[in-house]
Length: 249
Image: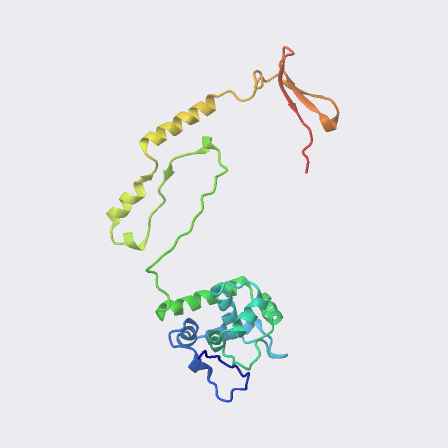
């Protein structure tokens, strides 16, 4: 017989949020292994001693971290997403029946902290993750895209190696001296081709005949909106003739 699961939206009388999130969950491990109390002392000077209680700075920075991990750039979508995730609710310290902060409160709190505070707090948080074994540097991924350089070929030069002073060369001064004196460059045949091309471009004559003459002069023929510039040689012969029609936007 075909089964059919009925659903009754009834009120649950016994529910513990921590029992619904597995121990290996990322947000549960972050909540248990990282000490978040340093945020209160680091942000104390940014708050007044009077007025209404603000959004908990620990909750705010946890929301910012969730937004980065979940790739959510909108505070409105961030709050909606957190309300649907039991593990994030446990990470933030909110119960299932407890309302999350308004997205506008998160946005205003974000404007309160300068960028230097975010950087300092992130460095502190990242150092704790490394110490607790939550972050490992065994695997690295690099993404790149070729971009055409807007550079002059006449300015191409051989690239010299910068000073190498790293921890892997600290105990070997002779290896460091050899690496510092090395030249990072292309193969010999490519260097010869590059030098030949540079000499050819530097020796090539630019423009029309007579364009480089020191006594050549420019004349404007026609109206300003449809002008033609004519470059004359000393003998009166036309050397260059180009239109100066205005560009259409």
